[in-house]
Amino acid sequence: MSLVAIAEKDLQDTVRSRGMLILVALFSLLVAVFAAVFRPGGPSGQFATEVLLSFAVGPFLVTTLVPLVGVVVGYNAVSGERESGSLKLLLSLPHSRADVVFGKVAGRGAALSLAVFTGFLLPAVVLIGLSQFGQLSTFNAGAYLGYTVFAAVLGVVFVAIAVGCSAAAATQRQALIGGVSIYVLFVLLWGAITGQFLGAAGDAGLIDPLPVSQQQISVFLQVANPITGVELLSNAFLGEQLFSGEGVNQQISAVSMLVFWTIAPPLAGLWRFDGDDL
Amino acid sequence: MTAIELRGVTKEFADVTAVRDLDLTVEDGEVYGFLGPNGAGKSTTIDMVLDLVRPTEGTIRVLGQDVASDGVAIRQRTGVLPDGFSVYDRLSGRQHVEFAIKSKEADDDPDALLDRVGILEDADRKAGGYSKGMRQRLVLAMALVGDPDLLILDEPSSGLDPAGAKEMREIVQSEADRGATVFFSSHILEQVDAVCDRVGILREGELVAEDSVEGLREAVGGEETLEIAVGDADADATDAIRDLDGVTRVDRDGDTLVVSCADDAKTRVIAALEDAGVVVRDFHTREASLEDLFLAYTEGDAPGIDGGGGDSEGGEDDGGSGDAVGTEEVVR
Image (cartoon, rainbow over all chains, first blue to last red; front, side):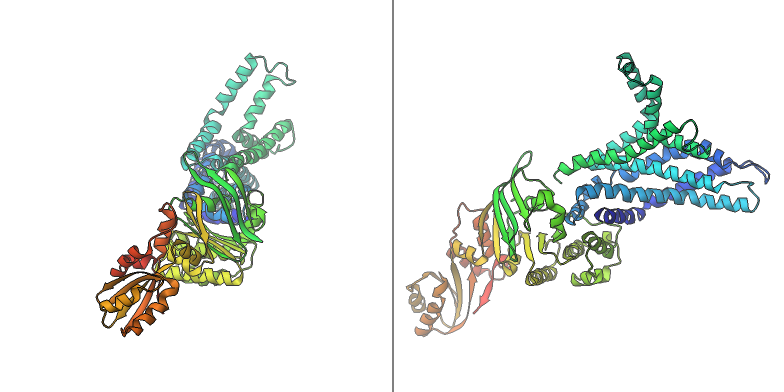
């Protein structure tokens, strides 16, 4: 399997970069800081894992830092090799350009997941240790681990978007601009842009004929942002409402949008990349 | 079967036509040297054969398959040493070769390949710390994975010292002996002469000559320069050979006679000297140098160089830089 060979090579290559070590250290440090801050003092204090995750780690760490890291890990995946010339080595071997793009998504996605898991699990070991010694009354390891999976999924989605952008870019510079734009769009401007869009569409009378309400479209557009999607799913998970209860429709749209964002940008990037002279 | 077949291939970039209506055929099992000055379109042609660059017009088939649609299948049976590549700085030499083996689904021993190209001792070092020559060797090792039917080597000797270039030629030769087709480009001519069955010379995107090295030499002139060290060169001696059939020019340079003559006139020249009682101490021939040949095709308006003038000048500074580049000296 050509794609697997590329993914494996890319994972080997990426985990050896200094950036990965910094990343793991940063995650560990930040999670540990939040854990320390949110730990109500004393052995009898209630330590709510869910609270730590959904009110501290979630909004401050996962939804801002993980997308950034995904973009950083992915934006030079193809364009970097193209500019340095190692892409020639890759395409001299029996790999198609599609293998290259999707192999990169898999390899870098795996590298980022590894960083997220390591970075989250190092503090978890400490937290588990503290709860063993009675310093913490409860530590919900299952919730913590599950949440880590959601964080990794979000990272992988952003890796996929950034790799797609990287494949479409002819130069590193273009890829960098693309990466920054992705981050700004999804993290900072999504609500404003979709709001404007919805307002304009409503004013133009495009929504009334549709069999859905403006409210439904607005919710869908929010969930279409992978960050909101993952937030929705992880909160449902922590509230033990995942794929049950009232929000199940929203959750399904969130999942489908995550799948969309993982596949469509690399495909679009491949379309450009496949037709290009290298 | 033909290993590489280009038909009417043209490649236009935004501001320049790099390759113009090129027809080129490399037969199965031959060693083909692809020559031309920098910027002649060699790398663009090779990039098109590798499907890195798409032709504006024309078709390219490699190992009987179309490069545009069957690239992966072709590269499964092809080993490539590209031009202007870079390695993965953080991966070791062995990891590079292992990656190539995995990619080709081959079962080679990485160490055996690394040993063959002479970098086994550095196999565990990160390739980022390799010299240019070691990188070249590493990628050659990757190209040899899976005993490919076709080897495409773009400027294989660049970055190698003379000993490394010689090893490269030996590997090319042994791959050819195994039955592989070898297609390689070069702007250094002495490499080509030693190993190639056939040579194509590209100039401004067009193939201006294609033949064996011998054939090209004949087409350009077929004249050779004979340098004869004699005991006592007098006027009688030069007169004796000046009138021989096939001799176009005789110069005396101290105790050395420099004779421009046709290939088949050499023995008659020696015999005539001996008949005239001149002691022949030593003699050797200088063939029309490959450099002259190359320049004739790549710079001249038409094939055909005057062997006499240029060669006798070359003879005077024997051992100088001009000689080292392209002259083949044969002691007979």
